[in-house]
Amino acid sequence: MQSRDWELFNGEGNAKMIIRELERREIEHVWKIDRSEVIDRVYCLRDGKLVLQPEHYDMKGWPPGEPEHYTPILCNCFDRGGTFWGAFEGAEMIGVAVLESQLIGKDKNQLQLKFLHVSRSYRKQGLGKALFETSVKKAGEQGAKKLYISATPSQNTVDFYLSLGCVLAQELDPELFELEPEDIHLEYSIPLHVER
Ligand SMILES: CC(C)(COP(=O)(O)OP(=O)(O)OC[C@H]1O[C@@H](n2cnc3c(N)ncnc32)[C@H](O)[C@@H]1OP(=O)(O)O)[C@@H](O)C(=O)NCCC(=O)NCCS
Picture 1 (spheres, rainbow, N blue to C red):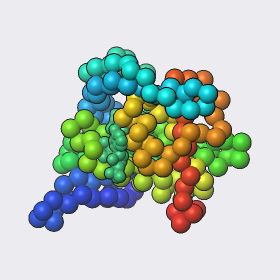
Picture 2: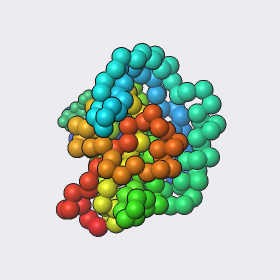
Picture 3: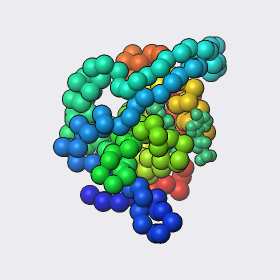
Picture 4: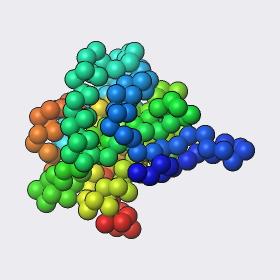
């Protein structure tokens, strides 16, 4: 296991935040990430185009029941070879990314970025991008040409992915679409220079 994939240094040259792979026993800690967010606008798809519409949610944290429902799903993902990264400030987990291991799509050349979250007070500092890029590199090493993302439709989330170069998925994954039809399904083409 690589202990440090990414480090953000403070002024004295000491690591302030690190990203490292997680062990299975650490999965339960992802729920300590502060998921709170105020959402004012969400995207929907109309005639194949992204359209913003006002919708207000004041998320105080993870939706009720999410940890109980989703922890076994994450553990199964880990057990079939999924890769988990945590971002840490000291001992505190402040971000997480999960890359599935099973290639999907008609050409079996896409990997799903299954989970990506950054604690509220650490957003907009480059951590989401660092977790995304770490996932892109690993996906390239695993032979994928694209990342597949079923994104929460909130404006912040979708604008984040669009700013990184994601576009609407050309090929909807039927299973993932059935699970989350309100999500915005996106893909990211892994640059050729990323190791395959
Ligand atoms: C979406 C999320 C992971 C982004 O993480 P983050 O650490 O705040 O994002 P970063 O600071 O790394 O931003 C990376 C790039 O996206 C852009 N970006 C981030 N948020 C943005 C927004 N709301 N609108 C437009 N661009 C945005 C940044 O400008 C940055 O671009 P730059 O490198 O050119 O400056 C984080 O906001 C989050 O956890 N949100 C709640 C949970 C969630 O929606 N998870 C995704 C589920 S699919």
